[in-house]
Amino acid sequence: MKKVLFGAFGVASAFILWGVMTALDYIDEYKLDKETFLGTLFVVIGPLVIMACYFLVSRRDVRPKMSNMIAWLVPFSVVALAGGALICKLALDDKYIGYCHEHILMCTNGFEYVNLWVTTAGLCVIAYVYSLIIWLVRRKKLEKTK
Image (cartoon, rainbow, N blue to C red; front, side, top):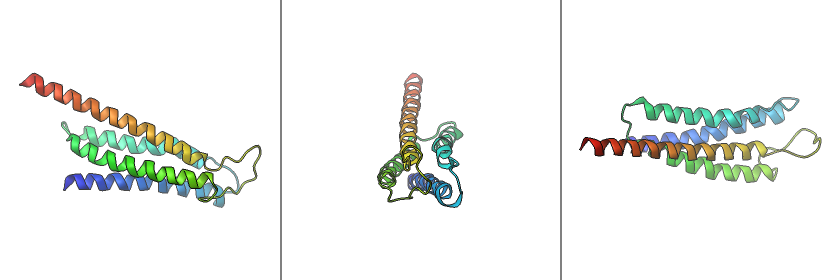
């Protein structure tokens, strides 16, 4: 039951990540009169906050269960990266949130989404490596105690 709860939190955090990004891009494009780079700031801050929460939860217990950590990380990765790929495709084709400002040199609409996807993918890889290292360290400690 606890694994299902962790999985639900993983899916919810992926939806929150992309929902906040979409809201910030909408505010940036339609509500504010100029380019404020709200979405660009969130590209770095959003995934870092989610991964910081992941690391804090994994370190909260002295011996967190690896299965609970993976139960959160796998659904988050799948939903965030698959959903993000779809959103990126739609945004680059101007079918998601259109560009409202005049183009100076080139249209950069959708690049925030691509950057968020790349940042999220990189941090997911770091989280998987982190989980693997914790698992290996625990396994080594168990072998020494036997």
